[in-house]
Image (cartoon, rainbow, N blue to C red; front, side, top):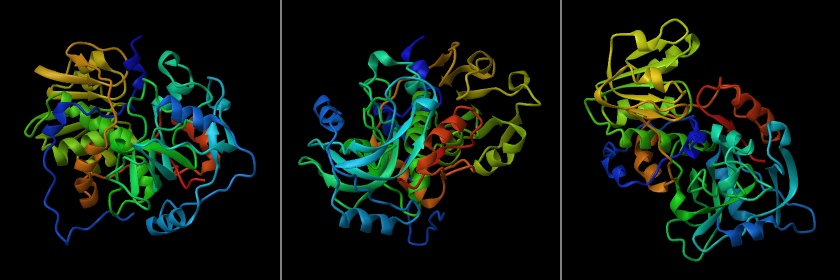
Length: 388
């Protein structure tokens, strides 16, 4: 099986040249109503443990100003709390370690005091050892998505300063040497180019659920050549990626028609996100319906069926499972500039984060949250907040 298949529905967006195709954000006025709601040296330095008790810094996932005040006023400790696994396996291999060394910060990185993090299927596949050949060394602190506050900046960093509220996907390549020390910790070190300022009006918990999924959604649309006036079918419209594909296609790219599949209880959610046609997969077989689409975005692994409902000359984006022509899969790369381009849509409410209603899960229940994610029944993103 190819490495790209392990991304499932949680890959992130690449910085390919096609991102210049992203439609321009809407004009912002003062009346807009906002949403309420590593290199080896770094890794080696971070894995060393130091003596003495750990000092914890709390950050509220619902109060940005409080998080800034706490982070900016508190000295960075030598140790932190973090979820760790020392061997590959299921969620039972995870353990909470209260004396993990805070990661060292390279010249092009910032140290983020983590306020919230999100889980992705790629986290589970990585923990299960699906791509050991390209993984970072054990022990591993998992987590790709982060939202938090900058508390330290490297000497070459130009875009951020201490106190900035940021979000992003912390590993540039999710399968090829992902960071040994991820976001399920009190602190994480991240390259400047992978982050963006957190959208105004969106709390840390919602922001944490965005980066990997929204970049994946956008990259797939770009690579499929999606544009205004085209139609799309989203398979798995209520998932972390699918829910954002619906919104980007409709509200950012200007789709002429958006159809999406989900189970019965989730159909109203699809409509609220912008789907024109909702298909209950428990009652209908989408591949037997007469409608054909310019693009089919398959986030659930039904590539063979998806190929039956795409128009001639169209594209099928496949995130997991077998690829049937004209389907394609892509391995993607984190890029903060994509988030920057999408921020106006998030701030205006045209694109909304979808967080599973069972969450956010507290930091103490990361293992339980992973077990829930692994059922495949989550709606939107599974978020951990506050941290710690």
